[in-house]
Image 1 (cartoon, rainbow over the protein chains, first blue to last red):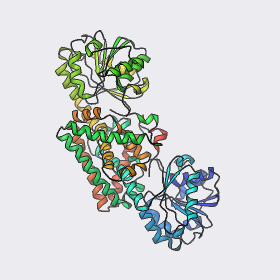
Image 2 (image 1 turned 180 degrees about the vertical axis):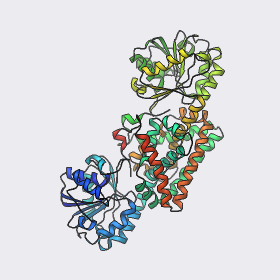
Image 3 (image 1 turned 90 degrees about the horizontal axis):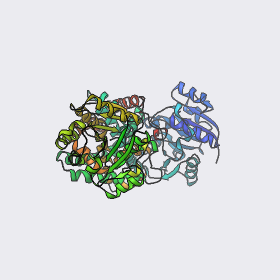
Image 4 (image 1 turned 120 degrees about the vertical axis):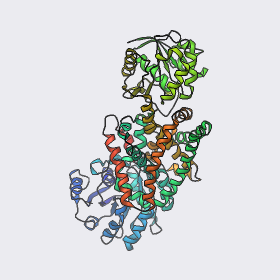
Length: 301
Length: 301
């Protein structure tokens, strides 16, 4: 498996890292790139992430046998429409969107007869800092990538898609788009929303800044995802709002149990609730790949 | 500043690490220790954390010029009562409790005329794994310790307390007990409660285990504190329940704003809420000591 030409649509952290990783693995000859921002396009060339900056999506995609769409979820629809006419019938097209049902819906509307080119992908990787400057070939190493293939995909195409992610260090899983969106509402989208809300709850208080001065490593890790990119996360939460709101309902029920036990000074119930959480989280940490790094294992008290 | 004899009451992660750090810094000649568990006491001797295991609090404390009380907040009251008669008038007594108003109230009830010996302390350090086995001399390095001195303390005594923590690597701050408890309800106790509730919300769903299989590094860091010790955290949340419930109110208000913007598909309001959180959290990360480690900077998407 080797590609003649990768077209990168969106030259940010995710796309840039994919390009660097593919090049490092020796899987691609030439990389074209498009970004809505002139400056980003030029920076991507300067940083040798792409070989050639293009002035349009269509120009970048022309002649590519591999296309990665790495734009915020909200920009997927227009991107699909912009590339469908230039996309070669045999090209492999993948996105890196954090939600899948809405991306597939946008693809149905925008790709026309090229819908079968798309193998929807979600690599579970990233940093809370965005942008091409932070792109690195190692971003996807030892991470998981979820593929949610379409009925229109060929077995061969799904196999190649899987091999691409494996070649740059990912463990690949397959899910339905619906199961994907329910799962990530629970383990990613809701946690982001909670971290955002926790930071805003501090800011809303007059002493918020003084409180933050005293925050330690526990708060640091708990709130790290609150620093995530606002546009990216606006789009994710909005695209998956039904599942996120359902998860919020489950969370509120769990929160109510804590509030009741605290208000009633019911220490036995409180301990039981904490034991349940602590047991589940400790067991999860023992699974492969879930251990915290040495440095982040510190707990505030 | 050098101590003849440190008495360690409670031979767990926090106490054990303090003993190791003090010995490494060459600040103590002899260390006695008491733990409610025979096994822990013996293990502390085997691991050379303490020199001598004692059969009672009183025996450990006798002749000590420095006493560290490192037991769960709920066990403070009985510990103060058990040591007051054996405590030398010139001894420096410190606790490591995560709440301060209740510890001081327990000290008033249990210490009698030795109340002036206590300089209440809260080192912001730890791990989510408990126990003497995980004790390490480096635990307090580059961490913050809050002292909440009593009106009964002498200037000299407060200075020595401060020097002890500084000598083992801490930055020392002073606060009133009330300000301490309000601050840590906001930046530590509530985040723990939210992390516990988030894990329980997953567990409550039939697909919870399958969801957890797919969780990535963002969930890992967000939920790390949910693995904390149940008895320790039952006591902290219970001791500081008034402030924790007040913070929960602020959090619910912030959460409601997110829920409203999501339900109404108000993407502009949603983006503004996320921008606020992301801006505050990003600025906080730029302050000294708040940066995530390289490995934990990855973000799930």
